[in-house]
Each structure stands twice: as structure tokens, then as C-alpha cells.
Image (tube, rainbow, N blue to C red; front, side, top):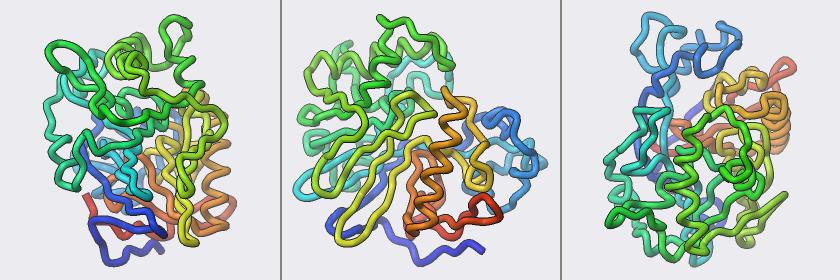
Length: 310
């Protein structure tokens, strides 16, 4: 049985404070069999997926659309402010995903509401380089894309930079829209000299380390927080739904390498179960994070993070 305890706006792990700034939360416009093709239909009949992971817009779970959050994790570690992922962004042309195209959200106001201005940000972590993780890397100023966070170091996986650089001509399931993402959200930050590319692992400070977790993309990563005897993992797009905890072979339609994505999920869930770690995916609504246990050769959600539900 899963449990939820009293909630709060922010969490503290050792000396690191974690808050989330939400760009949007709602339907991704895809039913489970579209978002997670070829998966067992019984995975979606679990009523605990409602209301935070399935919208009430269908007669059954299988005709409802998946619900996701677009958000940034704000970490304050030592004297520095670190943003984990950068959501969709405003003004971006996304013809392949019309719902993400030319948005006008108040995301920067939401950052301000948790005490962060663009100039305050010291580090931006892009766990991978999909459009919904790099959008606020840049903003449109006088017709040009410029870094939103002028004082920040942007940490990007070198494998993803190589994979999506149009000059390398790699085929991707994201299609030609990936070139637009590169042009408006990655190239301008590279040109500004604010990018640090990393491979394997990258220590941000004494509490925070990036680690490779491939499958969703070649350079997909997780962020490990270890401070004051506490440890949690920010797992990016390793998963998009609790249904993937029950069956690690449930892959989203956006996973570039399905087999490797399965292995990564299995490895992370095993560690989280054995060491009782909280996991924070990039797109979970509700309470944002969860704990797991081993269950019948697989895994099960055992509890939720004590964050306010969204």
C-alpha cells in the first residue's frame, strides 16, 4: 500500500533545499497506448494513476490521456542556485508538437515566486536535450535567442550534444523538429560560451553529481544528491508514469533506445528499493517523487514525497 505524509512547499536533504517551479501540468494529448506503445493494457487500470497521472477525459483508463507536469527542480546547494531541467519555454516554434509552440507562460514569474531571478541562477542542468528540457535555456530578446540565465553554467551531456548537432546528420525519433530545438535552445548557449559538456559523470559540488543513465536519449542522465546522510535521485525522463515501476519494459514512444532504457530503469529502481531512495522524475505531477520496493520480480510504488500535490 502506498502512503503519503503531510506535505510542504520545499524539502531539505542535508544542506540542500529542493523546490519545484511548475511551467504547466495537464494532458499530453496521448492515450496510454499512444504514449507507451505495445504495453500491457492492465497497467493502466490501476485507479491510483488518477488524478495525477491520467486525466478524467475518457470513459476508461485506456481512453483517458496521460497527465504530465512540465517543471524545473530548484536546488539551493551551498551558496549556489541550480536548476534541474528547463521546461518548454516561450515563443519557441514547435510544429511537431503544436501544444508546445509559441507558448506564453508566466514561468519566470513562478521562479521569482520561489525566490529566483534569472541573474541568480548559477547552474542549469539539462538532464538531456529534448525540447521540453531545454526551452527556458534561452529567451527571445529583440528577435534574437539569448541565454535566459546570463550568469549560469549550462551542463549538457556530451553524447546528446553530438547526437543532436545537425552537422552530424543523426537520425532520431524526434524527427526534423530536433533541428529547431538545437537552433533556438542549444546553439545560442554554446555561442555564448556558457556550456560545459560532460561524459560519464560530473561533480557539481560536494552534494550533487550527474551520472549517465542512457536509453531515453544517448546522453540521458540523473542527478544524485547526497548530503547530511540523506540521498535522493532526480531521474529525468527515465520514466513518465508510475506504470513503468510495475513493468520496467514499459517504454515511452520518445525513448531512442528501448532496450537500454529498460536496463536503466531496472538498475535505478533496484538501487532505490534496496537503499530506500526517493526518486524525482522530471514530469511527475502529484507529489513529484516516490519510493519503491521489490515486488514479485518487479517493483511497486510504496510512498510519495511530502511535497504539495499539483
